[in-house]
Figure 1 (cartoon, rainbow, N blue to C red):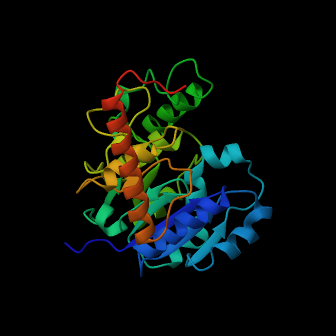
Figure 2 (spheres, rainbow, N blue to C red; figure 1 turned 45 degrees about the vertical axis):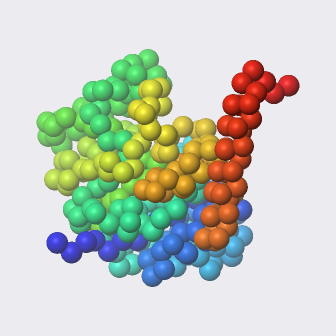
Figure 3 (cartoon, rainbow, N blue to C red; figure 1 turned 180 degrees about the horizontal axis):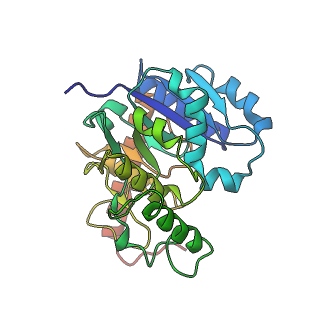
Length: 298
């Protein structure tokens, strides 16, 4: 089967120097792949971002004013749908890869996502919602958003007639087929529910295949990770430089990380030099601990 034509949606809204680094890196690693910008920050700041990113992006679109930062964060799926209606559908692609500004990708997207078929959605950390329903903020009884969740379930089971199980994901990145976005952009009650359980539900309702990808393991907050390094998570805590370097220096190691809000080299030599320097520092620290096992930093 012919693999889907991929495009990148670069979703950004703050830390302009980091945004520029990420866009440069995406462009270097993905020559010939459309990279399309979605700016979700303050509209008055867009012109400066647009100038800075002009050489990296094939098109750049800003979410119109009138919505505050909280709405844009909670309803990022609606921003993506509005972007699709206004400009995204006019570009040639089959599957859209969302890359937020604090996602660090160190491999081409065809290596990371090229195994997907045209009708498949990739949603990180995909799992039965029942596993986390009573502990996850967005569905837990007693939270300010629980009534919204109950209303969404009632809407899904009532007017929409959905009887399947619900699933949850961590929307730090995603792979979204064109036909899914076309249908999702036209749903009724577009602001009902939260995107991390809403997108899987509508995808199942529309008959799309949902996939997680084993080579992109996603860690759910509050759970003890398996015996692997945490490389993808919705946590606000940055992936550590030690983890980044360890994965880069390991053949077949992870090449996609979230969140990384620090600046990072954008050239191949720069990435290699950074990883070696971090690796040398780790070895030196291990040697010191071996020689002086009781030593503690002051």
